[in-house]
Image (cartoon, rainbow, N blue to C red; front, side, top):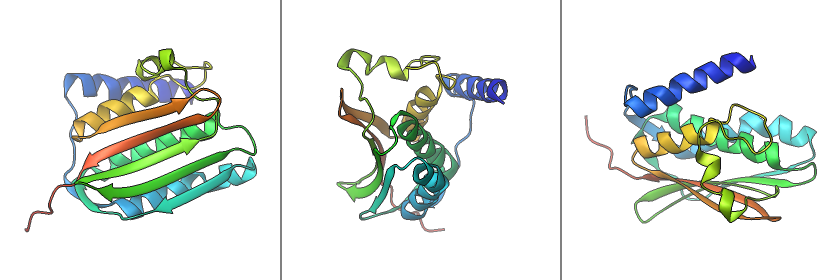
Amino acid sequence: LRLERLVGDVLDLAKLHARRFSLLREEVDMRALCERAYATFAEEARARGIDYELELGEGAVLITDGDRVLQIVTNLIANALHWTPEGGRVDLALAAQNGEVRVAVGDTGPGIAPQEEERIFRPFWSGDGGGTGLGLTIARELALALGGRLELHSEPGRGSRFVLVLPVQAVQPA
């Protein structure tokens, strides 16, 4: 399963770099997407005694690729849960303002040292040898392909917050 995941991630990354992937353009309800991503990890968080919170502020309907956005958000939540110790906290928040939708995933893990902040987005780099080391690389590339960006705010010893920022585009009439 690990090898299968690695091959799939390498193929995804190669397609992204070669610009040989397709993006759907569909209406995506960001509130529903965040609820779906949150529900995917609720059992894992509860089993580990992690305080797992969902804060749905103002949402938006975007014209974007819902599956790709979901892939980014679930990757960020999975990473947050991976790095958060039992009894810690992970939160998922949605907000819309100034023509942007922001999906933030915060954790109370070890945080990321400033000198490591760029490194974690490099292919095959993993802080603990777990995973394929491609998740954040793919997430950042997908965010860019969708016209957005992936921000990181972290403080060693206090946790990290990754924010997916996507532009709000007007829904075109059919």
